[in-house]
Image 1 (cartoon, rainbow, N blue to C red):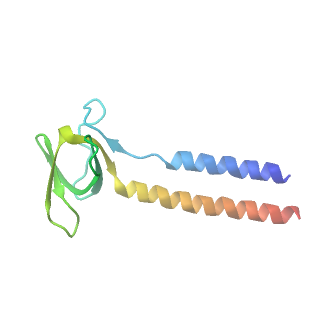
Image 2 (image 1 turned 60 degrees about the vertical axis):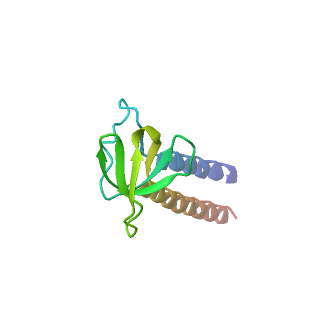
Image 3 (image 1 turned 30 degrees about the horizontal axis):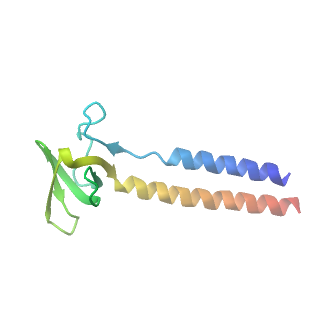
Length: 121
């Protein structure tokens, strides 16, 4: 009986983790996305093509071949990134939400497993 409860909880956990790992990526390929879904006033993590350090930016707008924003909400340093140098753009807020959901789900599954092992004794 213990193995079946453990198996069920493992399946539920894996299903939850797989479903919560969805993230939104924006790329230069127009067929996939032309950066029109980026929203002004949101923080994004920009991955560069040349392998340099990822850059966080508070997105403002797209001007021709450039992504324009600031370094942060409190830092008003202008950031201009050419589209040709961008490998991907990720919404950093969704990553935090997903991480929180995984932690809450893992705690729930741990509680289920703990209560089921106590019920068998």
